Image (cartoon, rainbow, N blue to C red):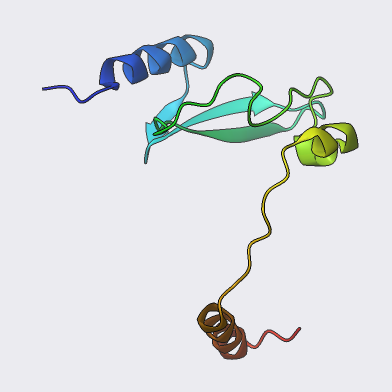
Length: 107
């Protein structure tokens, strides 16, 4: 019996495969090759998972017409939703300090 979304996922994979016939699907990711503006061939990994809570278009990241990633575009970065500051617990801070010490990393 097919799991929920399997047919939709297969449909999306087939459509992408029409555009990228050399695409590889492995580890819940679709790997495609594309040439960047400098002529260099780069591989892009696209996660093929179904979110528990669907995201509406434009809800999580603004569209960037320059081709730059949102964090590379100051206007886009400024328009992104602000995230709450994550505060580590004492145990987490101690665990990180021990790990850094074992790895020889100093601040």
